[in-house]
Length: 526
Image (cartoon, rainbow, N blue to C red; front, side):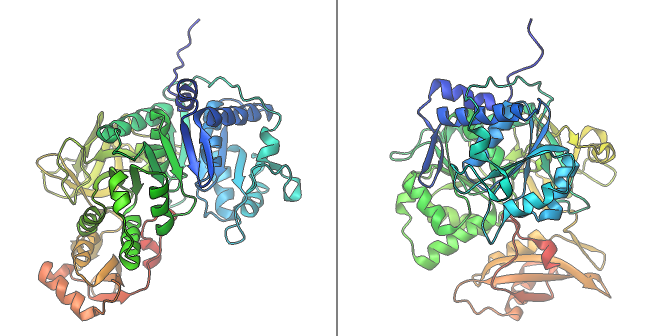
């Protein structure tokens, strides 16, 4: 008798390509290479191991791991078993890990060993010992063949050692939870966004179609995507890893983003696609300019790039496209939207400064504080509805209802739609500065500053002011060799901006604080 379950489970894509193209490369990380047959077999052994531990479909399994082959192996193994993946930020300390294990009701935890500088395994074990409901700890060791670990912990090699590779992917219903992605918690404790199998399968499928015209690589290139975004984040996890699984293409993993290593990987693996956040684009440009590196070979194979996670300054996009001879397609989304909501589609001209138009099956609107649509060109909160919207925040019905008022997900981002339906993100509502009663959007000022030849990178925040409530402050990283002054930048802004938007305070720094996903950490600057 047929059941109402479906095969939307993303792990079924890996199994499909293992049958159709078993020798095709699925994962590359330095010298290690896994075919689709090998990836599916390892995922099957993980799934069997979870069942040996007593886990059942629907149980939650946490994973802390950088961009190493372990990540897709364990991720797809958890999904193959019908369990729910809970990816955790690799920078979390014991207190934060314990919170996420407890809040997500994780029953098992896979944790990478780490390094002396970033001892994930030690921190993970400390957290695991504090959480009563999490019963099983598996250490992902630097040596994937290691059978023993400090303290007698179960290693990955020991965990999968006795398990067979054959495991039929558990059929899942469209609305079954596949992954719980935790938000950054900027407005309180982090909340787990429940993404369903339909959310991920449809978002990855549609995202794959957005770059379909680039799938026929240039001579010498191949269908390989360089992953420098952390896989615990929705951007890299869905738009690169999941997309590759559906297409049967290759993901090239870089455990830690570093400009020289990224360029080397592009050359060595003849990469045709790369995705990053704006600061990664900036870092690559800085490296090329400082080292005078020849990127002509990369220009021959790199077909297109995608940007997201934060708004890309128009000037940065122009400089990168000119240097690498490649088109950057900018998109927009959040963990709660699986993640892609809008994109600068290949078949339409891009509008610099926008994040494109809604993807297939998704609607976007801009509303005022009473949830009424605002006219084209006016600023309001961006709201979204469609197949990509999360199931809800795990165990938080009140917060889910608040975020989903009127059937639309309220993003907390401020934006404007133009007459052609292109969305421009103005700022986060929480980042908006109110100076003497006037609304000031930091991104607008950042765009102006980035056009100054003496500015390499900048971030604008509001700081307390007794008279005005908030004052505008710019943190600036000078371009190499530049000697631009505070007065010069203030004057530059005066020529471009209304007086109330001009930063009165400018602080120069050698670098700006970044999150693990490469976004400027404005919270730390404030």
